[in-house]
Image (tube, rainbow over all chains, first blue to last red):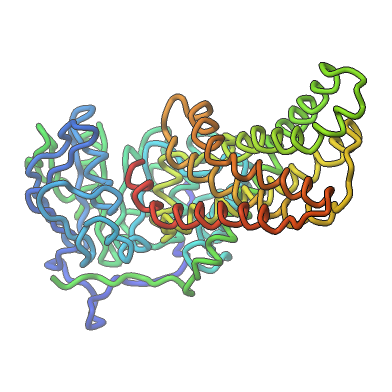
Length: 246
Length: 233
């Protein structure tokens, strides 16, 4: 039976006036963004708006800049051209820090320390970001890893590591969730878990950006799809994400 | 643009707390891998043993060489302690730390604190070996107590800086020592100078001040360029 993602704590994304974020609320705005890494232009004149409560799927060939786009949205990469605003903060050198605790990124590689247990890994993140360490255990239980909390990350399968990453997302309760090839190495149960986590973030008025090579899977989760071609974001279709969320 | 505020963390974490957490994590990783104290320290002890073997049974010469050889081994092998692979953050771990609200300075400080404690343990492990092999004159040995701490601190910060500079480079383990060794020479001079001065009844303060100055300059340099180094990686 697939584990059910129980809320580690319930919280809703709210506006500055305390009202729940409406779908019209723009959570991230990229305008003419350009990113060059080691003299290689990765993103060029890319524009994208992300609204509260939506899930956006990003497609593109290998090396097209999908991961770089996620890193810009995570405020980890500063654009060398254009303007990027994420969760109300301009992404510029050293200025993205205030938004970061409300962003969760699950990348290709797990961000787990191999010699620490899954529980220790999550508690470490909880303590660093000022969250109750007890949330770590609850989040692990929510992804079906309660029995593996004492197991070292180095002895876990790729699927377990992915689940632990999803537990981190549940613990952090982000307003912006960025998932890079999240379905890789996941079994069917855990795939359902991804859907639940995405639905939870959207339900709170947050936004999800999902990168994948599998258009069919993305179309089932996302409201709209964009494709990165030559560093630009091009509208690639409409998904059934909003129906799935219901 | 109205922006969703989202759930806030339960409590504000001070940079000092984050620094202690990072150092604690590094020490826990070391306890489980034993890279510094179970691998590098015995290697250092072997290096200390090689000198008496090559010099032969020339006790006065060994007594004279002892302190210098000890600090030379601490310097060279200590750099390896600071560059241990178990302490290297992958790109994903680095992103996670940054999103958890850990600033570049705090990350560097946490690494330096973990390094410093390990180096102190490294020095204390090798000290009895050096005494046993070289039988040095230990007049004024108490002066070595602050020297142990100051050298560990200086080397820890320089090692953390070199590690950040060489992060992601293929030649990291070679480049790191190359970067640290030249700038750590004043630490070596100061550490041996303190013992020599104490033995001949001279005030060791100038040497202590030299070591302390290196520590302060290294700390200021780290604080100044931490953010730049993070963006570089």
